[in-house]
Length: 171
Image (cartoon, rainbow, N blue to C red; front, side, top):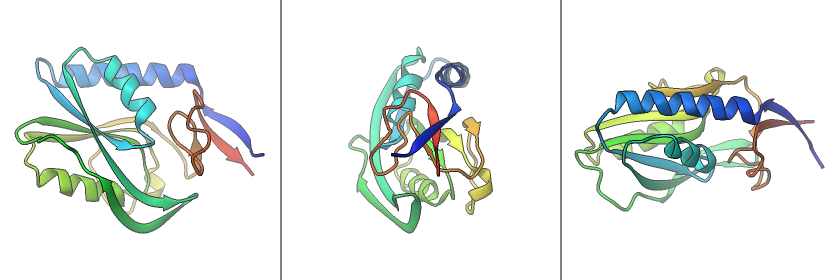
């Protein structure tokens, strides 16, 4: 069994999610928001963020795949699209981690074609050293080095999603 080392503990996660929620609340004062979560990794961050925001927040989800194990396949497939119209609405994409940016670029283009009023991006984790697509990310929880992380929704072959912290597998 792999040994998981803590990278970001539960207390740091909770504090940063609270800070992001307050910033989103300030930026969207008096407005309804549509959160579009990227399944499955976003779930913990998505729910914890939504619970801390007093605005009305509608929930939508997409499922996009581009990874097998620890490696990106380079192929992006949309497995589940949103079900409600976002035309004229203020939308925030909720992502667990931004790596190369290819998947998110695909999603941004898809959602822009649905004519939202505004479209922003919130990610728990960002790996700028891996970025190949230049993206404007509005809300970033933590920037991390190029390591494979698990926990708080992120997985390794569907394992470790339920850890209450962000960790990495020590080889």
